[in-house]
Image 1 (cartoon, rainbow, N blue to C red):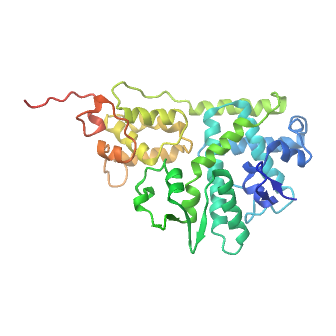
Image 2: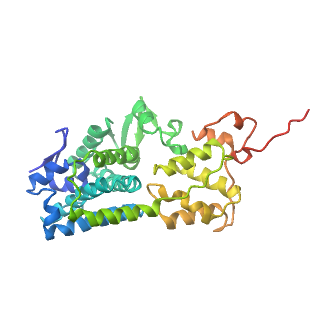
Image 3: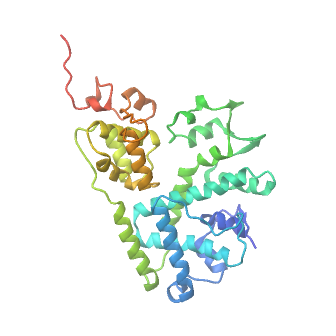
Length: 352
């Protein structure tokens, strides 16, 4: 028997609901399987699901993607499906109970990236047309994005592309650099699903905020307390200065909120602070709140920008023109007559 989403438009089989558990209505799904949330508080056998749910959040908090129990994208054994879906649904309950914004953001992004992997695979599935059709339908129903198959590519309208690519500042995502024919933008399966990552993450976040949870019970109390402790790892003492230009202040604010700062914004922030004489160790904690934060990767990238690795080339802060072209400029009158963010706050003497 399939599971229908809230809009009653997408009927999911057991393999699909394991791949895309955020499409299930939590309360209804548990009810259909003969469970209630209260049972997880009293049934010792269900404690394993709570532990798995906590582990799923912990992995996401570390910037990694949860590795599924699915074999060849199939639920396989009867027990696999409930474990896969239940661990997601209970993770959602734990996050709602703990209320830790940074963990909710990290979990939502990690689960979006996990689903992205399956959506890309389903879109590119040449042997099973129904999987491609399901992926197209999920994208359409959740994000009002019409995707069409054309030979080896997928196409969407220019207007849809502009709407969904608004947060992409890298050069390759600019419309002028895309293949456009008859008002349709051509994309690979990877690019198609990458385009909706932020929206998918936001969708999962909204599911967490909207779920109805019972009062805190003993079965959930310990893992929720552990999550609150885990979240403290991501609280940072932000480097702040009134001498920072608005583009840098904006980048810091985005990271403080646990939101995703594009690669170009991270490059700007890191090279600016390095140019101000700050060390990699001083800068690294700023990135702890990034939804995809990974300490090892962050330190490697910062050391690379600082010229401590490879060819020892130290990267410079981009010019104001470059910052503007990447939609990262938030100029104020004090920005007049400067050509690089590093010049902000320095008085210029004009020749008479």
